[in-house]
Amino acid sequence: MAENSGILVFGEVADDGLSGTTKELLGKASEMAGTLGESVIGVVAGVGAKGAAQEMVAHGASKVYCSEGGALDAYNSDIYTAALQELAGEVSPSILLMGHTEVGRDLGPRLAFRLDTGIGTDCTDLNIDAETNLMVQTRPVYGGNAQAQVVVDGSSPQMATVRPKTLQPSEPDGSASGEIVDWQPSVDASASKTKVVDRVKAEASGMKLEEAPAIIAGGRGVGSTEAFDELAEIAGTLGGLVGATRAACDSGYISPSVQIGITGRVVSPDLYIAVALSGASQHMSGCLGSKVIVAVNKDPDANVFKDSRYGAVGDFKQVMPAFHEKCKELLASS
Amino acid sequence: MNIIVCVKQVPDPQMPLASFRIDPATNKLIPAPGIPPVINGYDEQAVEAALRLKEGGDAKITVLSMGTNLVSDVIKKPLSMGADELVLLQDDAFEDSDDYATAKVLVAAINKIGDFDIVICGRQSSDFDTGIVGAGVAELLGIPIVPIIRDVKMENGTVRIERVVADGYEVVEAAPPVLVTVSNELGEPRYPTLRGIMAAGRKQPTVWSAADLGIDASEAGVSGSKVKIMKLFQPEKVSQCEFIPGDSPAEIGANLALKLREDKVI
Ligand SMILES: Cc1cc2nc3c(=O)[nH]c(=O)nc-3n(C[C@H](O)[C@H](O)[C@H](O)COP(=O)(O)OP(=O)(O)OC[C@H]3O[C@@H](n4cnc5c(N)ncnc54)[C@H](O)[C@@H]3O)c2cc1C
Ligand SMILES: Nc1ncnc2c1ncn2[C@@H]1O[C@H](COP(=O)(O)O)[C@@H](O)[C@H]1O
Image (cartoon, rainbow over the protein chains, first blue to last red):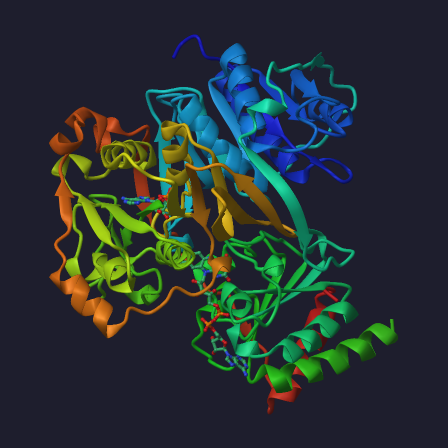
């Protein structure tokens, strides 16, 4: 694989420019590129890609392929897979990274098969092995009960998708220079073999769960929609939002769009209050990056306490209203 | 309509943490004594999706499973739920296949079956949590894939799918053959009925080896894999939890607020 060189980072655009996840990828890519003596190459497409491409340069990419105003403006799995296959063929990177986001989860594995290479998904760390120069991917397995270190050996590029909010984002350097290439892949809309005929939105609150400074997450033990509404009110007092475990979502207490965990959202608020949930690793993997985790559970032996900074043992129906009253009192006096 | 469902047997993901142990010498999970494996949760829901499709029209459901230590009672569950046929892909050569090699073996089996309209996988398996095989099977077959779905129907020859996205769901249409991967939003899988269990007990699964599939030993197992496991370990967890004191749950709640205030978290 000697001819393959460069770390290709697939960038995504968020409402306010380059996504946080892409910045995290670029931080790690720059570090690994330094070790390997290779360069970081970016690719970004869609509405807002031009601005995001500039940001990718500031975050360490020496060259960015940018496509805005073409077939890639809206994400389409078939079109993106074909376009990225074409670009990877042209660039021949040694490593190809994307976020383990809604797009990355879909695109990453498909692209790996197109390129006839291997991929590690949902990685929480990446490092270059000093002996082999291969990228060692650390990824939680068995729902987070164990970790594996894996390498893509014998094929390239070595591909990985990385769990959001696990790597350090790089600091932007406004004076960094890089080349931005107007990227015009040869695919067009006819590559799409599926058709979206309707979009149904879950009720949207203004703030995104990923951006909430405080989250109160409820589990199966919360027991009802009404009790979830009360938790949401307390979360509101703290300027935050309510989240949930899969068991709570599956029970119909709350919309599945607020599920947190390996198959839900990954969050890292300043404060995470886990209420009446047992602390299954599949859930906790989605919130371990939080600054302070508090558990409220009536079972003193619940696993959730192991991952928590503070524990409150008791029935949440009594703990939480008193907590709420005290919070209101404290916030009013400040 | 011909439906193929891919199911994997996995260690029970709900096993108590105390039973979860890894052998550092082999980099493998030590099977917990007394805790039988299960069918991957999403794959049971994949079977459920197939059964719902069958309720909507005439269909034959073939279940495919590749594995080396398949437990008969466990792997027959899709039959007792109502699936028509079970094909087991069993060969020592398949042991320790990664997702890449697994997809190759499954595709060889699907091509041997030949006739299919919909392939249904789970969104990911709960052992290695990768979520790759479905995409791989679709790519190798060259058919469209719609991942992470909550509903699939066949309407006038078109496959109509509800795909889960971050802020709701999309309705997607495609012409068969198509592959979908099922997410938990599909809903609970049905329980096997007594009649189903009896019928499943009488059914013999078809077993195909690497030779039956025309697969060379070098294409499967570790030698056919792209991703190599260097190390498998359980990170040490040191609990640092400080329990909030109080004479009643309400007092604990109030003290919790005071503590968080002291730490300037609120
Ligand atoms: C492949 C896979 C992926 C998964 N992905 C996710 C995921 O992304 N997110 C996720 O959350 N789960 C996920 N799960 C499910 C996960 O394994 C657990 O089953 C789930 O998180 C348990 O939810 P829970 O803690 O709410 O329920 P339980 O485990 O039933 O816990 C309920 C808790 O509430 C406490 N309780 C009950 N009543 C009260 C009360 N009145 N006051 C105080 N405490 C009370 C109990 O003591 C108990 O600890 C996944 C599972 C698999 C296999
Ligand atoms: N050994 C296997 N036999 C049959 N189906 C499998 C096997 N491994 C994976 N699958 C299917 O592929 C899906 C995704 O698996 P994975 O990519 O391993 O997370 C599973 O939910 C199954 O539907």
